[in-house]
Length: 426
Image (tube, rainbow, N blue to C red; front, side, top):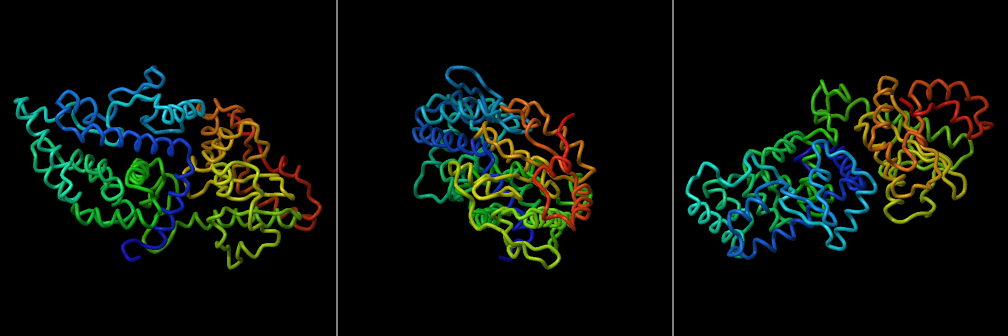
């Protein structure tokens, strides 16, 4: 694949896999799809759509959101799009299944104004323009690209709204083309100089990451562009401090490999079964392949539902004995601090009685940041709170102790982890 380096594509694939398992982002994608279906149905009958309806239901990102009759505007899509609390997730899922949620707005793109074409003073002309746009949108003889280009030629309909409408009508074949989506593709080194090149590149990206449709991929790219999903595009990136160019993955990724290897080898040397994240099985550290380690399991014991098992399979390292998971480790180095924490919180949300010791393994310099994140209200509202069952291990402590225990590692007991770790308390 020559349109993107293998290293960047590998990084994006891993980020997209984690995004797919994030309960909050998965729900937001479901809401976008649900709303897109409603909008297609509404706009398929242009004669029933006037300016007032169009402004309320289509032009604005979110006019009103009601769940079981209660207004919850701003609680699903927030400024930082942080995790949604588990109770609201459950209620929203039920609302989607029972049609108990009421949506007004597009839930897919924002607009610079609150209404269509405020610079046009003639409402009759606005109504005429709207009907022309909707006629084009419903023309089955036009390709998605032709629809977008023709609608963009109507006064008041720029690329944002025109391509957004076409994406709603053709979610498998066409992506929104606006400043956010263009910036996201530029961040991962893809050309966006015009609509045709953009659509070609984003279609290849969709195929290579395995996105189900552009409603899903566009949300992933929006989060990446906003920095919620981390991609280190420049040397001064505050998360990595290291450039990611077209030739190499950031050096911190080798630190992640080192820590992952230390945890895997430590568990194996203690006589435990071990598991490495499903998408990391082919990795190696200084020439030593993960898959060659003794006691590395090919399959996990099936204790939970499919969604939970998929989440557990992507945890960086697991220690096991028989069918029991004894400890779970998430390493926070190149990715956002949120990635491991979210996986841990998802497990708690799905199974509050889960009895697996959880450990976040972090660089010393990020220790206080991680502890602060774990104690955020979002995670403190979990039952039990994430800070109560998740402990922290620093890279330096792990390295030092692995050296110290070398001669008698086979005699170590699991309680060793209590000495190695500390509580995640403010």
